[in-house]
Image (cartoon, rainbow over all chains, first blue to last red; front, side, top):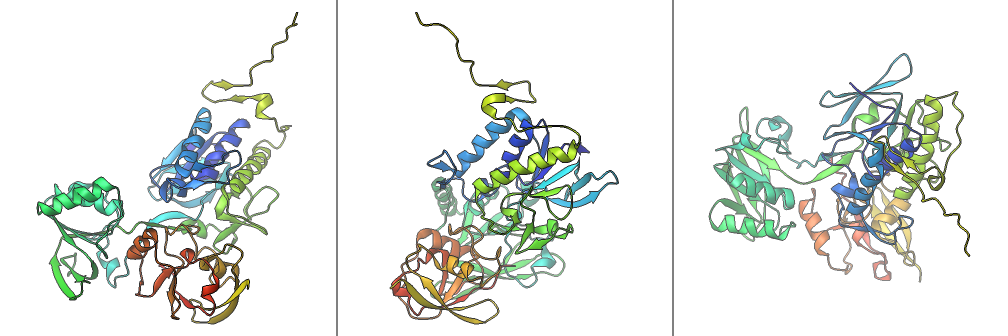
Length: 352
Length: 110
């Protein structure tokens, strides 16, 4: 079981900055995130987009902001459980919590801070009637082990980087790769697009564009898909396949956190603006995931909320300890790794 | 003129006739949110970067609208429930030419 002081759910900018503020108070943090990397939306949706309203940064790319935050919190040695979704929470008799992920990893902490943003990112599923029947029976939304597809007939749908990259990769693994996309143009890295073109020319990838998968067939597992070619002359093709991999990106869902007994309003968790605590004492919600009168979903507001949350968490963990907030310009930053950053001492020397 | 009249059919099929300002640098998705015609968290999820399709709408009137950017076209090519008259609300900047525009919000993606 992983033990920490503050368990943060969501490793976006707000969750990451909470590690820093907690570290100043000598509290250790561990973060859980459903995505395989830290940074939340900043890394997943718009790493190359500039942000203009981070105080002190006239312009910063979302991806760079995440890199900077990771650098800033490094001395506080946060733990990460990535690629797993926080699933259940249990309150123990001493008031602490155990949070278990979808993969069964258990985390124990006296304080839980939900910095879940818009929720965990789940694959977007195409609207096909009998899709659920074939899930894990020929249909998969992400590729964990490409060897599963060795010498199999695979059809991939989508027009972004992941559809391109996996088509390229599987061209050398599967016996047959078909890539179906609604239009002729693909949105991806230039060399991926060129590589698919090359593999298409060599006959290693069958490209069906513009086209769409409109039906799935099979008795127990997937046996064929129905592809509609949406060229001027409409044409439906039945293609025998072993696997269908729709790669339509990810969309955020509040998910299991919605069932934790927290007060929810407008798809967000209600908090008290005194310290961003939820209706369950010991569980806080900070950043885009929370709501209160006047709420703005801004990264800079998340930073503020994270800071106040940590002060309250400290009081909760150490009800008898006296503490006043200290400026980093005065106290410096003492990492758990033994590192120490502080302002250089002024020189006291007479000028003659 | 600073306001235009818009007709917006929400996801429950209810028609709303609303005034939208042309001088507030707003787009159609933001107007829908400001009038709370769709629940928060179900529209404008990416904030207006044409990176989700939660603000997809169908254009019902014959207004000339600005052409789609590559980003919008790419997003719509991966969205669901797309029709020939689909647009992303976040990419439609409210302008005086839009007076009388009639749109219907696309269903929420499951």
